[in-house]
Length: 362
Image 1 (cartoon, rainbow, N blue to C red):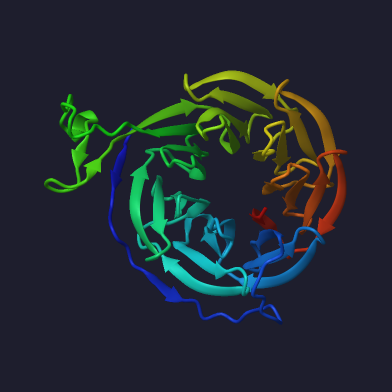
Image 2 (cartoon, one colour):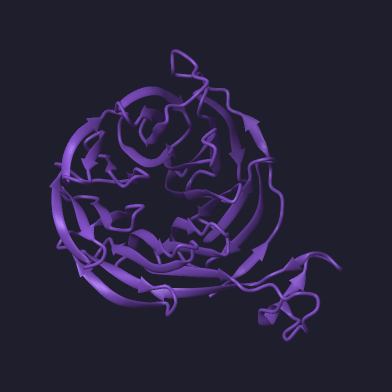
């Protein structure tokens, strides 16, 4: 296993010279906004989640797969994945429906999983088997850490930025990564060398450089789908991950780093999994199946199979846990599911082959 972390700067951004598809600019987003990527036409759809109307489509570049947004909702960050052949992230001004910049990641190819935490954009670079962090103020990468695993694909970062979980599809593993406590200047240095995992500084007499611990959990079955249950402080407690080749979900205890249960689904090709914010349900989509699965978290039992007609992809749940949105890639729409009645209540046409989504708003 290979682990490393380092700070460095990469090439910055250049303006994206693409025309805006929206006919009008908008200075303010609706209170509840859904943003959805279309892989085939390279656009980001901005949707009023209350009316289910598409307000605009913004060009975002080649083969976008995943998207996130800044905490204030002003910017979206799109990973131009290209199945590992691309190395850019597109920045979008959401209120004005405008592409702002295309960030060149230099040698970091295959950006995929993205999340915005603590004022930074965190992303996976699948080809380089690592996780990296982008400073939006400079559009430069200022931290990266290797996982040593093939296919570092999707990503979760705790609000305190001290816990990271990523799924490695090619190696069939989860990486559970935790920042070790920083030793204060008053405490003796028990292990003063970084090669033993000890704390050092960045340069002579520089700031502390805490080490990280990575636990690799073997899952099997090429997992892609995963999400994290956490306590009130945001610390991870359980990780559920669906095996693409396996038709079941592995339940991993974060503290022990072990699989403690398996949930049988009888559905192959599990692709995405998302917990409701209230922690009550898990919404699971398959790549080739005809149903979205609703799992009761407490009992770990499937309580509903909702027919969507074809395979599902990205999942977003509204903050009040009332609705789930599932991108139906082969059907070219986003399915809207009422989580109170557990029924399909709408469809949104966002463009061909929709995939990654994010919620912006309350």
